[in-house]
Length: 193
Image (cartoon, rainbow, N blue to C red; front, side, top):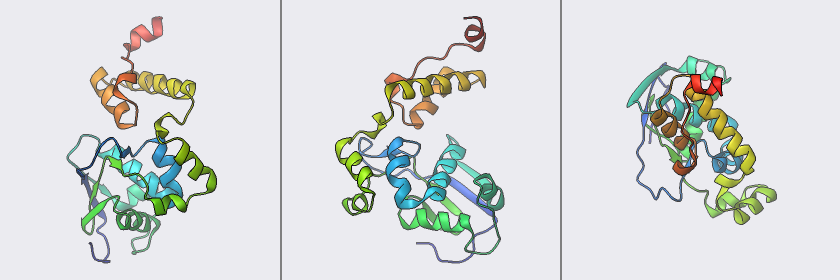
């Protein structure tokens, strides 16, 4: 585990390839993480994990100034240890949801594990009931909502110039099943039809 020294101003972020059973783990942007991990970790830690996951994407490693990352998350930043960003990183590290090899050298996984029985007991009763009655929370949102969001994301990525393969990869990373991802139409076809 990393010592409690100060982190450098420039953070180095890379992917943590955690060996696990993919059927039981959840993409960082999934409904499961939003609904069940959020009350355990807190919103700033969840947003941090999601932002780092998006920033890394397919890149091997990125470097980002700590103050820039903190400001992009709405956390503010002070150079002293104990800033909101530092506390969010520490919290994720303490829950083994990211790895910090040395101060400022951080690895982030693609998915998070399911909550333990002890963690599930800490949730509000409504979420405990949801977790026990709906083991597949990827279907939590209504089909209409998820389909609408899926088509909107597909169209947005296509308008930004992403290829069909890039769109599919990004949507799968966001928790959509590969078979549910529609093929994007070209932006000229989308505007003429």
